[in-house]
Length: 292
Image (cartoon, rainbow, N blue to C red; front, side):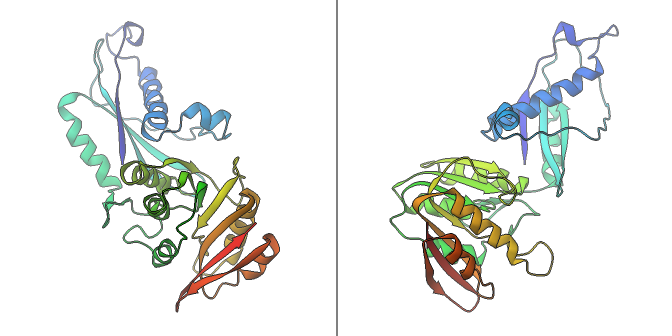
């Protein structure tokens, strides 16, 4: 997945040799990075820093120069996500002229090629259930009540399947905020909401809900919380997200979630909400509800 913008090299960008002063290349890479946040992701970089209090300081830089940039050149700058770790993101930046754009974009896509699933959903390798719709999410989407309305949040939204299904099925939902701790998942979710559910206002937010508190209160929250980070089940993740949901709902707000049948989330639901119960279950999953 890549973003592209075009820049113009001006007189003050050129050194005595008549070519681009090399620190200006890095400056324009960062300009493209900022444009990507606003124009590509719909989340201006100043808001990320000032409102969300998130920054991305550079810890390592590598550059390779293939040809000079001259005064008056208007190269394309491409931004791509190369890899996503637990505490870092590796970005790639390419500067090209118009005649070699397609070749470079193709090379960027090879690094992390997107997939298109049935229904037109875009996913990328490395995020949860990137090759197919998760069975638990499908079960939850099929059992969401038809009367959901107002401002809704999708906790642990992944690549946005639940939010798209909700937007298409519930005409009274006015907005959906999608939260996920995976940067790559947020990019895919943003694309899916824009392409498949543009009828509903949405915001995709890169959040660790176990560490950060959403700034809004919601009429309803839907979620398919992760229950492991390693091979062993870690129900504390889901428990933490249930508590985060309780703190983010308006009085009378509703939670709908899917969970593995083996995970006993009922006690934390009873402790965090006024009422709770179960809608349905099969041999593997159960759909739970709660009212604040």
